[in-house]
Length: 457
Image 1 (cartoon, rainbow, N blue to C red):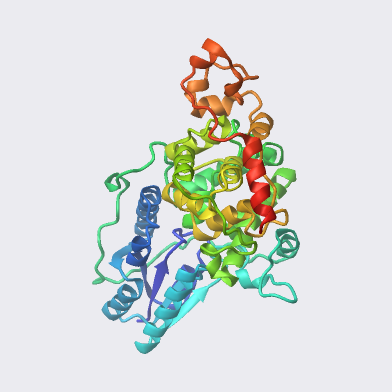
Image 2: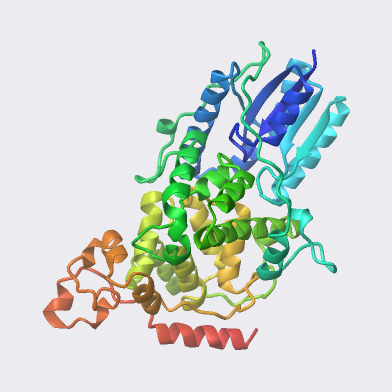
């Protein structure tokens, strides 16, 4: 009997899973394995919201495998040690896994390959599991990656996507390989009250509903803060409960401007993965433009805390930050606004914001979180690094009647549409009636500070 191990990482699904299909095609039995990586836990990356969503995903994956005659094997510890232990227990010939792009994932793969070779076991790493197009498949003539999205997208759009694979009907798992209990969401403390459910079943239901109802209007409504007209599929892409290949194929089949605009956003995700694959240090170091005079000190710390708590005095910024705390998720337009406000209006280091987002975002990953923060901070791939988003103008444009603000900042629910984005303009008793702070900084002051700092770079 030949036996393979499938090491699940950020690909917690049965549909369109190339490592699982390859293992099933080449072996008489497989061990579906997930390791609760102590290295990731030590880095602080296992924040409560992601831990809870992960528990949903693992429970759903285990249930799906049991429906097919198998089960999920869960271990905790060092990934390399645990995989090697399962190899020894099962006498496995091969290990299959998806390719990662972060520096940590690359080091883990190198360590695993070396350890398995010493045991006479082969490691197979599969592309286009976590991304629609493999990071190295689209490169310019003079570099190992594209640093600007538009030319990348032009080449990305011309790539032929492989066919999506069906979920297996039967998964045979050998006896005798021990497993820990599959984690449960209810055992995770500190979870955001409004956190969505995880798992492949939930992801596929959301995808079907999105393709039937929301995607057609995406081009026109994706920036509508109150309308909440985005797919909300990003957590499922992050945990791999949905295949990006299948997602792009099905979106393209839906057709229309909305589908095209949505696919472009999936391409942005692939773009950031190929940047990080080529420049792993960009997870913490400025990718391009250096800004080494970020504000520090007691006043900066006060401003940061006001930003975190949604008490900056700018309603649309505060609404987005409160949505983040309640749901573990934030509308994309809100992410742009809050990041611009922190890095350019308050002139605080982007790493401060990126770390806080990773404490709460259920879809927070190194590639998209860090590089989107760099894009907005002007240190990354943005070709207009000095753009500053005005929160008042943006609020009036993308939340014109204040519905989004009133939803998340109930202190302002009694204000008229004309006042809700500028409550500091109220006077006397009318102003005193609202328990809401004055702005932490005048926008003109923040802009002047940013321009002054920019001029010294």
